[in-house]
Length: 386
Image (tube, rainbow, N blue to C red; front, side):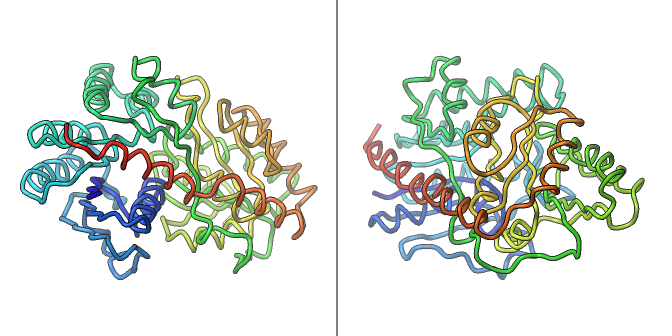
C-alpha cells in the first residue's frame, strides 16, 4: 500500500494529532507499506529535533502561517496549508489511499482532489470541529459553515477513524455511523513512562499539560487552586502549553504569591513527561454543558502512562474513564469540587509502588501502537480504486 498522510501538524511538533499520526505512520512502515506525509514546516525551535520514523517514510514539509503562539490555528493559517496542499496532492505520485487529519477545510480539499484523481481517502475523526466551534462562542453563521464543510469532508470518505465511542455516537447523529470505525486512542509509552527524571519544585505541585482552550475550561484549575492556597500555601500549580485561556490563567496567577502558578510554553513530550512524573496529580477537563461532553482529553493517557493520578473535571467519557480506572479522581466541572479533589490529592499522595501500578495498567490499556495497528488495518482495507 502507498499511503499519503495529509496534516497541518506532525512530529516533532507536540500535540495529540502528532502522537497519533506518527504512530500510524510507523505502524504502516513496519507492515511494509510506503508512506508519504504532507505537512507543514516545523516551528523553528523544533527543526533540529529528529523524529523516530520508519525507513519507508518520507516527510514533505512546506512553509505555513502560524499564530502568535506558533500554532497553525485560524482561518488564514489553515488556508496557508490547504491551498498549497491542494496542488501538492494533485501533482504528486498517486497513492493507494489518503489519510487526512482535520480541520474540515483540509478534509474538504482532500475530498475534491481525491474525487478528481479517483483516490479513496479516510478521515481521522479525532474531534467534531463544529461542536468545538460552538463551544468557543463562534457566531452561528461560522458554526454552520464549519459544520457544512465537516460533513462534506466526512461524507466523501471511505471510512472515518473515530477516537472514541462518544465521537462515534455523535457521528451516528449525522447519519455517518456506517462510515465510522472506532479505533480508539492512546499514548506513546516510550515517551510517557513511569521510570525517568521527575521535576522537583521543592513543594508538591499539580500540572496541566496541553491546550487550555474554551472547550477545556482549564481556568477552573487556576480558580480552584486560588482557594486551595488558603489551606495549603506551599502547593504549586504548573501549566504547560498554550491556548485561548492562557491570558485569563495568567491574570489569576498575578493575584497570587510569586511562583504559586508557573506557566511554561509548549515543550517536547519527553519534557512533559518529566513534569508529569514529579506531580502529585495532573489535571484534565472538558467544560460541561456546551454540547461537547463527548470529548476525551488525551492528556489523561499521558498522565496514567507516567504513573501519575489525574484529577478530571467534567462529565462524559473522560469522567467515566478516570472513575473506573486506578488513575485518579473524577469530579464535576465545579470549582469547589476541584478544590476538594486537589486537597485530597495532597493529603494522600501516591507512593512509588502505586505509581508503578498505574503505569502497568496504562501499558495494558492505552498503548498507542495498538490503536495505530487498528487504523492501518482500516487503511489497507480501503486502499483500492474509487
